[in-house]
Length: 460
Ligand code: GLC
Image 1 (cartoon, rainbow, N blue to C red):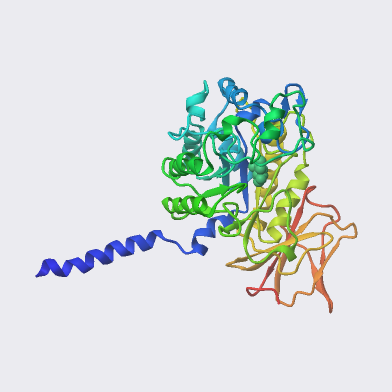
Image 2 (cartoon, helix red, strand yellow):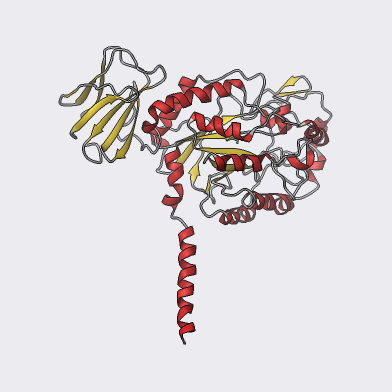
């Protein structure tokens, strides 16, 4: 009799444990919403071309697209894996760069559109372990380093486009849009083939076969063999079907707390996050969704030797502030070189961003969007703390007259300080404005932050 009484207890125990693992969306999103700043990494065998094929500079687009843009023959592209030997790759060093920059998560291309898996996979030989002299699973090493340094790790996976695993989709990029291979005999194939393919070897299987034999098993591997995966970042749903999207989406259950984006298939799979690319949305474009702007530091995702169009660290810091002031995240890209090192220009910028964040971190991490809009002189974020409501004025253009005007704040203002020095600022209210007296010289040459501490939990 007693034995039977224990059965319901057993089920209650099991049920509670299942429940404990299933977080609500808000709980699942919490770390991400607080993180604000992450590192995108685009790395693959294409880094060896560095944007140039047979002496022709790729005319347009990210250098990770060179196989498609230049219509490089299948076998020829495949052969470059034999030279991929990034002996300088050091997972811990990469994670340290991210951490020192103040980034809280990393999203790396596990497989980009060229189909090359940067991990050991049983679904295709076209992977870093089986096809290169390097022979190491860099995702394994990165996952271990992230775990060691408490960095969240996510995987980018090109689920539809795959230019090497047969049956994968290819977006058609026309010749006048970045043709870097005018002499190639593949031009004939290019005009004959369908679906954006330019080499018959891409068409020896169907899209469904590619999904079932490559994409599904690889995503399963990614979500099983690397510990906690924080983000699955899909991209370019070219020719994507509902059936394929459903199968891939189901796999996310392998990581119950994973966060995913809106690029699996539109509009059926909106995911958790919107992904504006290379741009920061205006407040009007935002509709209460979580969003993350992904952006390059120069003009390319994958490494391109000739791209010197680097944004200054000042612009990058101001972008981070702008994004935080609108409630989004900044996923900033690094395109490592073929030897496994980061371009020096990226390292410099990461360091400068880290230095700024070190002094001004409380205005960014876990901050909330500005309730009082944007200003000509800069942006605003808020953060509810135990001491009261902190309002941060992120000043891009330091007023020469030593005074900063914001709309009248009716709360009791406990104090106003320059965040990085602690220097106190005086303030007065008139009918329409709160006017803050600030030092004549900007305390920071990138963005200077003034902190107001208010009584209450919202601006009155
Ligand atoms: C694009 C490109 C790609 C890049 C990505 C980043 O859709 O196809 O090369 O990885 O955006 O957002």
